Amino acid sequence: MIIDPDHFLETAAGRLWTPERNLQAWATAFAVLDAALAAAVSPADVIVVCGVQGSGKSTWTRTTAGERPAAILFDAALPGRRHRRPIIEAARQHGARVSAVWIDVPLVVALNRNAARSHDKAVPEASLRTVFERFEPPSREEGFDEIRIVRP
Image (cartoon, rainbow, N blue to C red; front, side):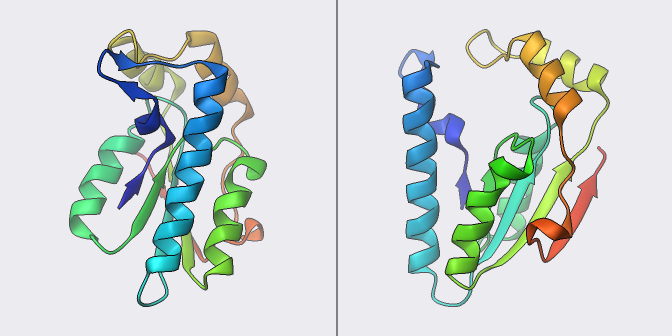
């Protein structure tokens, strides 16, 4: 199962981002996560996939979902500890194993991939640069059982 807050921003006309819709998308993503954790027959395996926009998170996530259909993959930039904390806490409340996968690419790669996206899915360059500069690599101190760094 893949949970990506951006999926909840999609409309028939493409992705529509507003501050209000973004808040609702995140609330929906967390509700889906909680429901998936509650429905798990055995302790769930939660994989938090993080990295800057355009790093290749969604591509990696789609491939991994096919290889590990029982895993719950949360796909979002999640640049700081505070962004990842609610996912880790939810997983722990349900006795789940939680790991992080950091898709780490050079800024130029992320910028080029972002520039190739459709207009409705592209992130403003200034925003991407800010996320890159402020990104806090995931750590075991946050509560992850395992951390994997992928450099595609």
